[in-house]
Image 1 (cartoon, rainbow, N blue to C red):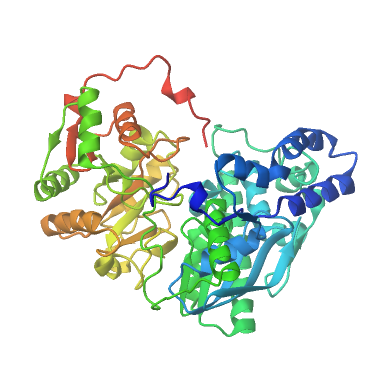
Image 2: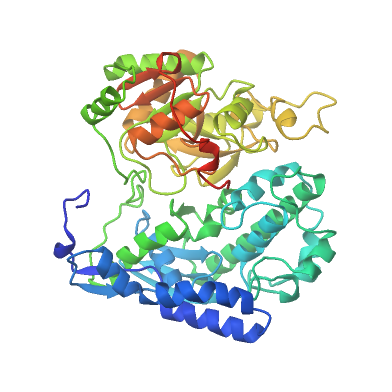
Length: 557
């Protein structure tokens, strides 16, 4: 059963977010084009395709036991486009989607009007901004299809000195944002790696080994590919505005998670407003496939007001009642105190003020890759050591990784050069100049955690080294409980902003259940855990008994 109490037998349509046979055609054509070089990759991928992926319709019917309806397969970028436009607050808008690759398309643009979308232009494989970015992710030693956001976070530490090298040799970029890649520098069409020996020669060495020391060259490479990505996105956005004449823009696809590029599109004023699907990757594509079916196939109505989007915070996941949480805690002998909400907010805001790190588990889980205040680890943005504490003692991740602020929507312009909503943490904005601090003399050469410990504003824990922040605005309509917590903190401190990072450690998925949250709490140096209205203190908990080292459970991202 679902959250809505609907059984598979009651469904009339199911939709999958791409066309498996069309994607299989692309794979075969690509392997044949590079034969015999691609044989190892071909032999590795074919068993899964022939056994499972080609028969997606059969698998869907098997998993949806009792389902007898039809199964639809919108194209990959149709699904992304539907996920971008249909939940947006706009009656009409331009649409841009960018990712690694779907069937053949790697990027597309089009328009949305009412309950219809139309794609008007596509860029095709192997020419892909997403795959270019992933190639640099691989080359700098991070995990493919996972560590791309680390490149974005690492970029401000470097100088974009390889930009011209990329544009002169690797990419032929046109004024409208379309481009072609010189495929001699890449290996993803035929091999099991992203880059070729020509790429390594061009950029001065072999790929960095994962988990090895980061160098200035790695930072400069990150800064360079980030600058190129931003330029491509800006050119496409300007071209689409010119071609469509539409005032609003909707974005989806994995590249739309590049919040630095999104922020630049907004600040350039190319469009009056933009809306980005919070689950911009393939999870959002599944939502888009369902919305495409509802609006295009079934002609379902769509009503918008031009202000609030239809995902309303994207709190679409499972939830647990206080009674269910208490039952679990009692069964596991975990000491806790059940509190009225006002008392709880007082206790938690005091804990944050006193430098404590709090695990915050409330309501329905977020849909998408960002924790938005229901499965979050929170702390004091004013604390000069909180970022290093969270990175090293809580998240167990690289020191350079920045943290995001959750700021009351009504206070966002008090802290950031931003005067619109950013509910999904998908826009980077500069910290207001009057809050910024000049770094002391002699700190310019510091790197990593040492550089992060140099305060750059009066909210140093969320101010990145380039004086920017990845902003989440908190609206009282979308998340009233989280809004009340930050408001209570503001009443006591004058600051309507706190740190928000996802409730997990490096390599793990975000916690979903009370059990997940408690285990993560006990494995880290978090001080306080809030499960619904239940408050737990670390020093009161019994030692967690585990047979194996939890650090080996998940592969590092």
